[in-house]
Image (cartoon, rainbow, N blue to C red; front, side, top):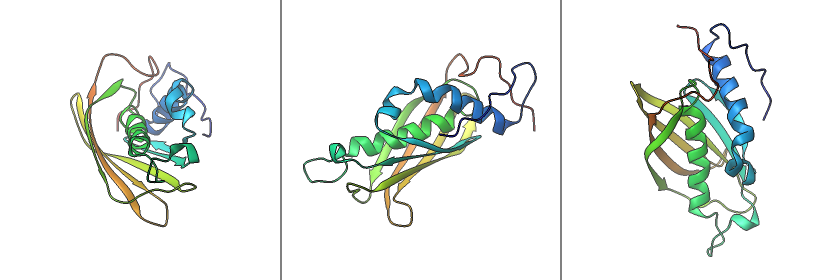
Amino acid sequence: MTQPAVPEHAAPHSAHDVAQAVAQTMWPRDQATNALGMDLVSVAPGRATLSMRVRPDMLNGHQTCHGGLIFTLADSAFAYACNSHNHSTVASACHIDFLAPARVGDLLEAEAVEQVLAGRSGVYDVTVRVPGAQTVALFRGKSRRINGQPVPGLTPTQP
């Protein structure tokens, strides 16, 4: 992940700068995502893209990527997208549809996009694909804002 500069906390900043600062703060603490070798490709307000190369130790008994690991990639992209506004946010529900297998060596990319953000609740769609090839899974996550901020005191400018 490219390490964006953390903006000063004293004044409001662009929504993009806030999303970057949140990602930079969360990334080193995200041990599960890092242990699976994921990369943060991009983050923006309400959006995030993560990638993961399928390793031999990620295969199930059918020699395809274990569905739980595909789910984890999608869930991680969802987490970065829904926390990008600097409000601590967690999943309240999620669903995944597996559409095609992923195989060892495949580079999976999970793109999360905010569909609705209303009050403390949000809905995000995540597409997991092998770039230039097939869609592997579709994930829908519902989020709930909790108390706190990933980067305490950092506030975005108003549009």
